[in-house]
Length: 287
Image (cartoon, rainbow, N blue to C red; front, side, top):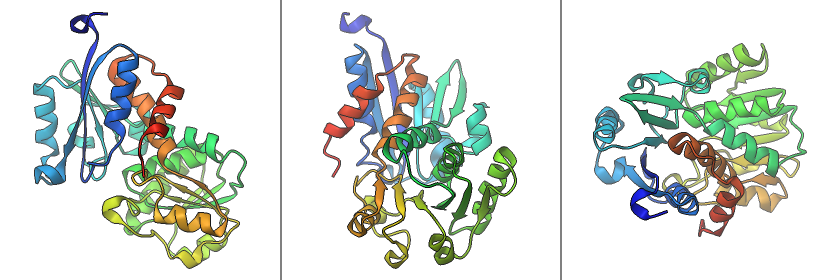
């Protein structure tokens, strides 16, 4: 197809400290394989010297410049909600948006994070025990990951967050959807992990700009499995520490790929090749 007649798409990612994101390259490589013209721009609040309060202006600017859509990441996944015209059922239930489709003057919010984590977990930790799991973090990504965890069959989820009220809100939403008692907001991290089969880190701790561990290393033990949502770097300090102990682990790369698969479809209306996107992600220098 001649370049000037190929389908075209302009999208972006709004977040803070996102220069290491592999999402633009992932989308653009799949679009090239599909014969599309596709430009994915990073809109980094830190680089621009802006706070999250600039989100409304950035959405308006994207609309005026003809963007087809935007991905939304930390710290804006919940802040974006009142700025949208419509929410998908998943986004409404989870109270968080990571994908905004801009179409016909309307902003439509979706959540592809939970699908991304669920598919990554199914492939990466297919046979682990799921009676009791501890999740660290109840922010925008955390609400999606918690929903995925219960969808995957976790029977009891303890959610621990630096803001206890936020953990309580996420747990309450989960119990309304999945049944009373499936999730609780925890306060005793050591006791919760001592009784757990696995741990999910849904905080930004471990990212290049938030280096470190989201929990004391002494709480980890070989029988635990450990799942991570951070993917830059692909091996966080948490995963490195857990692997050294002999824990089964899941890095955040799979979630990044599979949430991007669904976002690409929403932006373009074209089904991407998920396996090709996985291969491309694996070929990138994610260290």
